[in-house]
Image 1 (cartoon, helix red, strand yellow):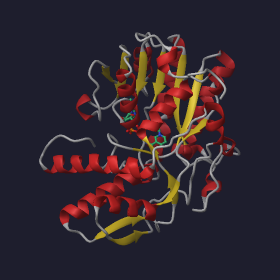
Image 2 (cartoon, protein in one colour; image 1 turned 180 degrees about the vertical axis):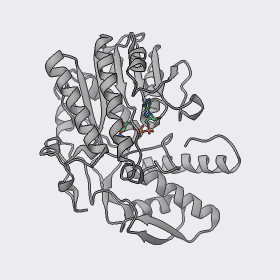
Image 3 (spheres, protein in one colour; image 1 turned 45 degrees about the vertical axis):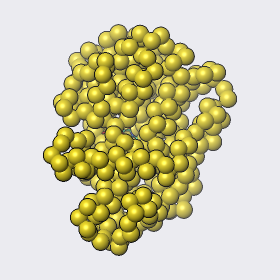
Image 4 (cartoon, protein in one colour; image 1 turned 90 degrees about the horizontal axis):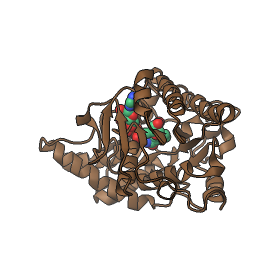
Length: 347
Ligand code: NAD
């Protein structure tokens, strides 16, 4: 292991240092706010453009601001007094969203552009950017039998149109703020993240949540069939949310990883068909499969090469998919039942 011995916020920051989290009304930002709160940090500022009633998690004692971070004035306000700034805000969703709404995805460039400048001007010590595996060259991801992606595979660049290019350019901003201005930035390329408190319905949800919901719905309605996007052979890896926020914390506080994009994802590859079987197993049901080959399905295969993160942090996301999916399924089932009963739910 290189870098600091224990590179985490708890060992690097004072408990009253101000931590700013953009996109904290969403899945990962909300989980990060909760993590820092549970660790005893007393000054956390959470920001999201959604009205407070739509935030996935509202953590007691955390300052919540509803502001659009694509506007410079708001970013200045958001970053006032910040010691660390985490940018988890983006207009995004699963394949159904990012293939259809490329302009919205590209516009997230404004969020990073103004937030990083504001963090720099505010004198923040560190800045974190949430990049994505969609920044990788799509030519390398055609086959389900994919070779895991290593960090250097982003170039020569041929990112996912819209969303992936926005991530790649924002990464470059982070690298240049360090190179030209000496502002410490950290960049993680997330591979599919799933877990409780994530989007599970409405069009922005990703495969694990969508599949759990469909199985739960079939059980409830007595439907015999499940619709799968694509031919079901496409492969992915899925990282549980607890691993994701732990990884963010480690990456942000590792000196070796300044301005250096790194994979943050599971290296356990699974096909969508097998993911459906896992969810069916949890639900105790077997469904007939109907394949919608015209639906958005993304690249043929994608996996995370974790050689670099292992080398630098001596760690990688390790929650077994079966275990994480069980917790996710249970949480979505409760959301589903609550919604049916007319109660307030997430997404
Ligand atoms: P999410 O949609 O749950 O959260 C993003 C939040 O950003 C939302 O609550 C949204 O309202 C907010 N937001 C959007 N535009 C904003 C603006 N202009 N000002 C303020 N807030 C704004 O998504 P998530 O899964 O939590 O993703 C967080 C970050 O991680 C994003 O940058 C995303 O691109 C990246 N990422 C996520 C995954 C994944 O699998 N979830 C994979 C790769 C990368």
